[in-house]
Amino acid sequence: MIKITFPDKNVKEFEEGITAIDIARSISNRLAKEVIAISLNGELQDATRAIESDAEIKLFTFNDEEGKHAFWHSSAHIMAQAIEHLYPGVKLWVGPAIENGFYYDIDLPEGMVISDNDFKKIEAEMLELARQKNVFIRKEMSKKEALEHYSQKGDEYKVDLISGLDDGSITFYTQGDFTDLCRGPHLPNTGLIKAIKVLSVAGAYWKGDETQKQLTRLYGISFPKQKYLEEYLLMLKEAKKRDHRKIGKELELFTFSQKVGMGLPLWLPKGAQLRERLENFLKKVQKQYGYEPVITPHIGQKELYVTSGHYAKYGKDSFQPINTPAEGEEFLLKPMNCPHHCEIYRSKPHSYKDLPIRYAEFGTVYRYEQHGELHGLTRVRGFTQDDAHIFCRPDQLKEEFIKVIDIVLYIFKTLDFKNFTTQVSLRDKENTEKYIGTDENWGKAEKAILEAVETKGIDYKVKTGEAAFYGPKLDFMVKDAIGREWQLGTIQVDYNLPER
RNA sequence: GCCGAUGUAGCUCAGUUGGUCAGAGCAGCUGAUUUGUAAUCAGCAGGUCGGGGGUUCGAAUCCCUCCAUCGGCUCCA
Image 1 (tube, rainbow, N blue to C red):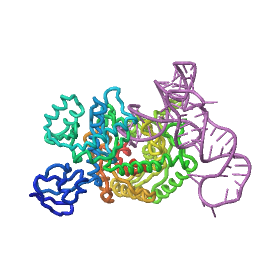
Image 2 (spheres, helix red, strand yellow; image 1 turned 180 degrees about the horizontal axis):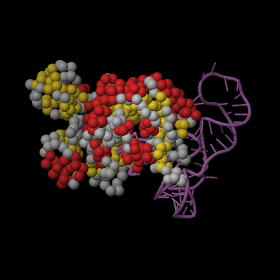
Image 3 (cartoon, rainbow, N blue to C red; image 1 turned 180 degrees about the vertical axis):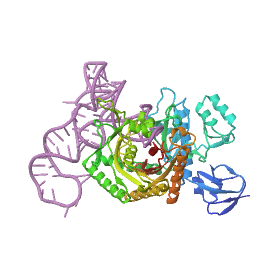
Image 4 (cartoon, rainbow, N blue to C red; image 1 turned 30 degrees about the horizontal axis):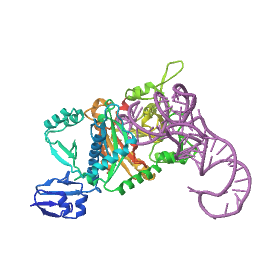
């Protein structure tokens, strides 16, 4: 007999080799039917695996994040299976679960495409496969064996995947006639999947690398009940009604014109009124927090951005220089306010006793964004930042940083942004050539940010490799009505710009 | 920029075996009505069917190309 401990610390005894499903059945038949995956001593695994020794167990159903994850991951395998049936000759890359649903990346043979019109038949095939109630069979394999298997098949994608894995950790899952390299866990059987929707198809670069081949990414979502799918689709529909692009049009807040140019919003009278109220509110808050308004021009000499380091980094991907008719001068449309504010600071000598000095500006900037990246008012080519630069002594850094966090939180609260996440973006220490500035300064700046967020008790995530090229940052992200996450506020420590 | 899709009156949309297919509702205008909260009645006006090129006796409808938009990828100073 083995002892199984439940999340409520309740302990029950079972026969050795019992499965989580049988354990669930000892609680209720319904739970036995609904259990998708389990956590055994903190490790996710299949509900169908035999348990041989004492353990702490958690049972996950579709109502749990872990359960949804396994459910959708299994659905991705079924999607891949359906694709193999319908499109012979495809090669498969990966197919993970995502926040809402799953996708699979597929390399289609030359000339073959999947488009919206094909979704129905893919869904039908997937449902058919789900109804077969195939069990997911787990199998461990040595790295050598696995590599040989896929090398023989000529599947360079799976060979690539396996090459990056440690021997002894390689497992495969088979359902019906389909086998895939996979860590798991998976559903007990495919029959739990009752409703499937193929949502969209898109191109996705292999390994997220623009220089690599583009694969076909097929998105889908699935549910254990038809009703859940209907509710989800209704939710999507409702969310679309709240899309700011739709509201902006209907309320006559802003518009775009092909003649003016893509990503260049035109603020209509009502929108301008709204924007003015927002700006007035922000200006009032800035004043309270000790910021002094400044105003800078919309263009600056190319040399300014060469000095700041921005030109080296973004010059090629910016609107190209504006040339004067006679003197051959080169100006850039202002892509950021930072260098301008630095020049304001430099306009006269400052004593350390004058610090901190806080400049604020509603600075309109222009950035060349790739045309596929534009999105309503949230990603544009011309926009106005409520931007500020604080010049302070090293011993004032932490306090100033905290004050900026305060102002951001105050504004979010006032504007009713309740659901935001916070992210500390640090540099990727493996790839230091991407960044400017010394190790020492980077170290100081990163430390200052982490101390500040700790002091404020903010719940944050650390992302390495997401820092700006000149310094680490703290980003505040909010979700829009249709569930997309956008960076709204950002606080950055920059030791490099003042020196330059 | 890349993959897929879409682009018909101000708005929402109908119109795909190419041949009275240039339409509807709402909005607008004119007139009537005066009735308590979006949608009374009648009439009128409004479109290079995204732009350009091609195939055809004939194209909104087929082909090419460009532009924009949408869903993703990449990017995001």
